[in-house]
Image 1 (cartoon, rainbow, N blue to C red):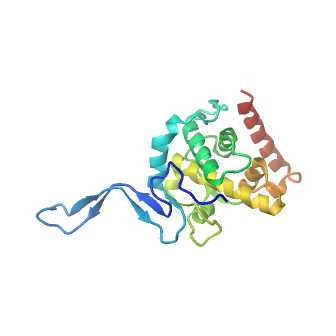
Image 2: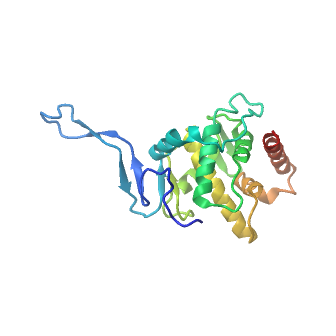
Image 3: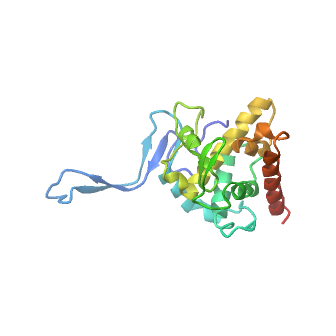
Length: 236
C-alpha cells in the first residue's frame, strides 16, 4: 500500500472525514423557536486513525472533479440502455484509487466499465445472490464486502468506506466502494501468488471464481465474455 498522504481531491486533512451542512435539534428558545439550528459542513477527526470515506465526501469529490477528467472509459454502451451514463464516475473513481494505491500497472477505466457490464448490465438496482453472498448495485458489492469496507478492526488496513445498506445502491457510492474493493482483491491475489497479480486475476477473485478458472466451464465463460467486452472498448 502507498504511503499515507492527502489526495488533492479530499476535503479534510489526513485522519479526518467530511460532514456536510445539516440541521440539529437544540433547546427551544426565543432565538430558536423551532428548536433547530444549522451546523455548517466541517471536518471531524477519526479516533481510529484510519482514513475513512463517508457518503458526504464521496459525493463532494465526484461533483467537484469528475466532469472535467480526461481519463474516462470509451463512450460505448456495450449494447445496454444505460451503458454510457456512468462514465464520469467510472473514470473518476478509477483515477482516484490509482492515485491512492499507485499500482505498477494502473487500473484501466475501460476494464472497470466491462466489469460493470458483466456484473449488472448497468442496472443501478441490480440485486443478486451469488456464491459469495448477496450482491448489490452497479458493480455488485456484496453485503459482506460493505461491512468489511467499514470495519475498523477488519482485514483492511486503511482507506475504509462507511456506507449504509441503502447508500450502497447509489451509483456513485457503489462504484467508489467496489473499485476500492477491487484494489484490495489485487493485493490479496498478489500476496497469494507471491508475484504481481493481473487485473483480470483480481476481477476473477472479485467475482469469487479465481480458483475455478480452467476447471469450471461457466467461470471460464464469464471471464471470456468480460474479456470480449473489454477488447471491444480498447480497440475503438
